[in-house]
Image (cartoon, rainbow, N blue to C red; front, side):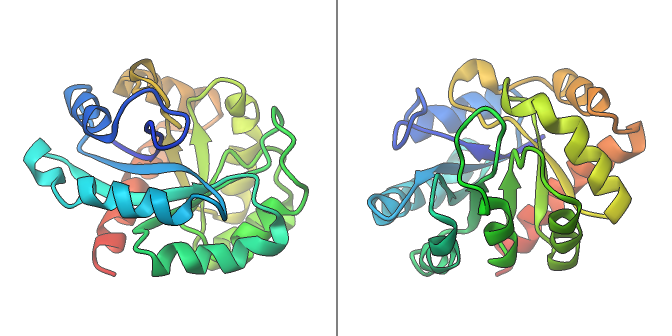
Length: 216
């Protein structure tokens, strides 16, 4: 299993990066991305610190990617800060999408896709136009196991199928209990309307993304 959306104590997670990685490995994960919530104020701090842990991930028998989840970033700044994050060493850039359970600014999904982020997290009631664009630009859309954000998984899955967009399954883990089992990941995917084949493809997509990012 692979989780490309997790949080440590560098934002609102409960675990320091090392314990997050260790608990993920114990739960059966082979790779994770640490993607703490970032904005203009803390982007450099997050990436300079998380990258230190990512460099020694092999000691945990894990692949660890240093990343960031740009969160509640004004849409007009997203493109600029995606570039800044990558210049600061982010191996993966996630944007906190327009979940229906938070007041995320309208236009965030579109700005993130136009900027070519790696993953658009919990994109809520994403539009068909945005899903089409995500498919064209290779931006992965997230099916999430996290409560609240998961309310629109079915909508995301249906539009991704219709327009050929890439799906990944992430936990948006903030605590040990969020590192869910393979069985629960599968159940959430099937509950969103994915077939078994589509579920397997979503899991494989995460592996493909890790391989691609490590080759950058």
